[in-house]
Each structure stands twice: as structure tokens, then as C-alpha cells.
Image (cartoon, rainbow over all chains, first blue to last red; front, top):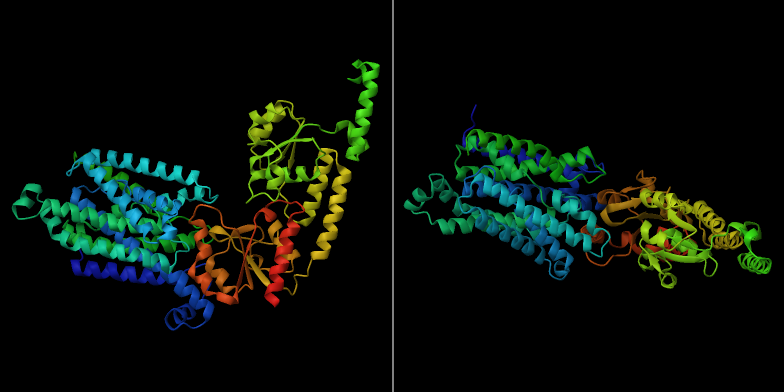
Length: 331
Length: 285
């Protein structure tokens, strides 16, 4: 059974909306359904309102926005590199963004100037994609892409660990796990304000890239012959992905595999057309991260189980399956 | 061993011993009194500095000099520091090593195999344990008399400070990563001694654990007690600046306490109780 494309988008959107609601209603403080909605919408009950508006709402917004950004970035990078294994976590974009964020925090720059945090993460993400393109070439074979990704990601993770270990702050060293695995616990509206403009800008940049990515599936020469400016396309796509991965990682750490699994699941329903896959992956990514964030609160309410643990548990087997398939296809 | 010593020297030795015994005020244990004591744990560092005879304590750990963690950072500067490594500790030729029960068993095991006496001290979890630790340290150092005097002083000071928590204001211990402590912990007992009811315990914590931000907000504590901030930055501490906490405003007062008085079971916990009493008086005004 195949869903028509608009129905697919509607179904993904509905799933996202329901999971958004679930994210608002699930939490360690047991608040009744009607109480929590009354507090959220009408501001009834001072403390409950505070919990709903300042603790749960930012968490749900960030879950949806970051999930959408990760799904969209995965679809963008896969379209650009024409490789189903291109994913921000696997090719080192997320860990480089985390390195940028850690640098901004540990040097104290982000305390003096809040925007420095997403900007530094963006710079880290951009640098990693630039290095990746240099190493693997614009058409990067799967092997060079993954190997370059392993190298970049190991280097970024090790540097992050080094900085956090050298920090005078006793808590910093324990946060390596947050930067590697990601979490939305105790984020606030400040983080929403910080991340949302960057995520939105990245999504906007993806729109003009969508059509060109469709043409690119025919090959670079064919795409160029029908008027696609490849340089501009590359720049747009890389900038969009870096903006989204950078801002997402700056506030939530590196949440892996969302950009891999979501486009993979939706590719057939989108006729393998990148332009369709972008919107579907954004909606699907939002649903997946919201679901993961609800799950971590249900599985271990008092442990701050990391988001990336769940996404990797689901995503890593997918990744292995994809490797097997690309090998069978002789790539 | 004394049999091999010549008569005049032996006489001198006895005199020195008698002098030492008089100094240590503990004649019966004098025969086994350690002369070169090395401490490799923050809490034993402080107890040993408080109780050791002059010259008896040879080295304390580097943590004892950290003014954020140690209540006796200034005193510790007078002692050579060690880093708790078996090799450097053994090189100091100690006849007694003081460690915590959570000190790496590899370190204490190696020292014991090398023939060094190692005494371990458990972290104190209540006021009774603080008394017991002081007395145990006195015995280990051959300074029972000084330890008993310190405990008597501790008891008197605590009794003077203690307030009844049954009807007192409600306070939450709230640290980085939303960590809180229940009543079966030293911090919980400090809170109780200052006459506060513990919101963490109400939320079901008996030892340490997470007190989620939203649970804290709904609990309406009269006072939120946090530790001091550490240099450098961390995501873990960000929750202490969460806008939702700021929005609680005057409904929940905030107090930042110096961690150094809360970490170890030493008489310095009384400073923590005193600071909390002051915060409590501020609430009722």
C-alpha cells in the first residue's frame, strides 16, 4: 500500500502533533490532563503554569524543531552527496558542532554573548562539512565519505573530551556524554529563542535547494545542462545543514541517526525525489525525536537517559542494514 | 627491638616516649602511635589536620588545598601535598595511611601489600557518624583524648544550634543536574539540624538523586539551597539559572552555600548549620 504524497505529509504531521501533545503531558510531576492544558493555555494555577510554560513547552518545541532540523539535514546531505549513508552524526557534523559549542561555553564567550553558542556550533559544523568535501570530493564514494566522517568525528569528539577534562569545573568532564548523546532535559525558553532562528533560516535555505537536488539525481552533468548552478547548490545545502545541525547540537547535544533513519524510511513513499523527501523528512524527524524524548521520560523518569541512546539503538541496526545493502548493490 | 639498644640510649628513648605520650595525652596507646601519617582523602585530610600531633602528619592530598572543596585549605598549605598515588605515598615512608572507603582499592591494596598500615574512613551520613569519625581518627592517630574533647565541643555546639524541623520551613537541596539529597545523608541531616523540613525527602528521596525541576516547582519550597558555582562553565549548572526558577521569585528564597562545609563529616558541618540558621532567620523576617 502506498500513500499519496499529500496524505503522507498529513499523516506525518498528525503523528508529530500528537507526539508534541504527549511531550507536553508526560513528565515526572503528575499533573492531570485538564489541569495541565488549562495551565498551558489559560495560565490557571501559578506553579502548574510555570511547569507547563517554562519547563515542558520549551522541551516539546525543541524536540519538534530539532527533530525536523535533523531529518531535513539528513535528507539534504543525502541528496547533495547522492549517498544514503550521509548523516550529520555519521559524517562528523554533529560532533564538530558540539566541539564549537563546548569551545564557546568553556572560553566563557557564550556567557558574555549568548548568540556565540549557536554561532560557534555553526562554525564547527561548517568547518567539518568543508573538510569532508575536501577529503571525499563532491561526489564522495561511500567508503571515502564514511572514512572521512569517522576521522572528523573522532577528532572532534576527542578534542571535546580534552577540553571538558581540562575544565576547572568539576561537572564539565561528566558532560562528554551529553555532547555525544544529546538530551532535552531542563532546557528553557532561552534555548528555544537561541536555536529557533537558526533552525528556521536553515529550513528556508533548503527550499531553493529542493528542485536542484531533484535535477542532481540525474547526475552532475545532466543537472548542469538543465541550468542547475552546482556551486550555488552545494553552498546552499551545506549552509542549510550546518545552520540546522549547529543550532540543534548547541542546545541539545549530538542526537545521532535521526537524519539517517527518517529519510531512509520515507524515501520510497516520496518516489526517491529529494524535493519531496525534504518536507517529509522534516515532519518525520520531528515525530521521531518527540517520540524518543517521550520515551526517555517514560523509561527512566529520574535518570536523564540520553536521547541519542534511544535513537542509536534504533538507528545503528538500520545503518548496518544499509551497509549490507549498499555492499550487495556493489557500491 | 629495645633490647638491642644500649642502656643510656634506652633511657633516652623512654624519656622521649614519655614526652610524646604526655604530648599526645594518650599513654596507653602510645606504644602503637604512628609517627609518619599520610592522608590521601579530602575528609581524612581535614580530620587528621584537626587531630594530629605536631609533626605526626606528613602529607595531605592535593584536594585539601582546594578552597572550594576543603574547609581547611589554608591549614593544608602547610603540609606537603600528595595525589593519592600509591607510588608517591609509599615514597613518603608512612607508618599509617588514611584513606576513604571509596579510595581506589588498587591504591590501598598495593600499599597494604607493601606492608603499610592503611585505615579507611567511610563518608559520614549523619551527625552520629561525624562523632564516630572523629573518635575513630583519634584512635588511629593515638589522639583519643583530643578526639573526645573535640566531640564534646561538637555536641555542645550542635545542641546550641539545633532547631526542631517538625514545624520548620521547607527547604530543598538543589544542585547541578537537578541533584538533590534526602534525609539519610549528611546534607539532609545538616538541613534537619537547622530546623528545616526536606523537600527532597518529601519527594521520595532518602539518599541522593534527581529532583526534577518541575517537581521542585510544584513542591513550593520556602528555601532552595544550592552549592556555590564553580569556575569555568558547565551545562550541568545551567539548570540553577533556569528562568522557571527565577520566576518563582520571592515565593522560594534562594541560598548558595559553600560546599566545603557540607562535603566531609568534620566539625565544620556546624558552620553549614549556622549558615542555614541565618537563612532561616532571614525567611521569618
